[in-house]
Amino acid sequence: MLGEEVADTGLLELTFGLADDPTAADGPVPDRVRRGVVAAPAASGVTTVKDTGRVDPARHHVVATRDDPSGLLSDRIAETVRPGYLWRDVLLRPQEVVSYVPYVGPRTPRAEAERGRWDAR
Image (cartoon, rainbow, N blue to C red; front, side, top):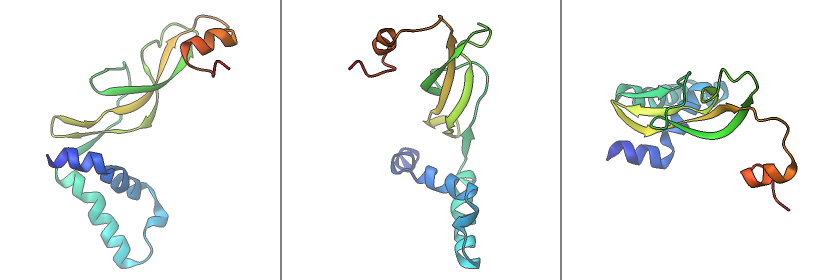
């Protein structure tokens, strides 16, 4: 499928990255090409996913966690690392997020290694 090919090649990263990079345009022709490339995914129905609120495993990929001492934010999105992309209602790539987790107190290096946060050596 076209959507899978676009996601696999990283073209979406390139196109949306161009939109945020003011140095990408160097003159009228490259600027016109940049605007066309950036506009193409939107014109074909691709939208950016930058959700807030609860982590939804169907839409979000948790790449890191952050302690929540209050206990009120657990399993909520703390930060977006990379946006996700939807094509119509099809998820091309999940949003990569940092999620709050319950705070369990100070941890020892051994406990961190067992959780996979630190190298066990």
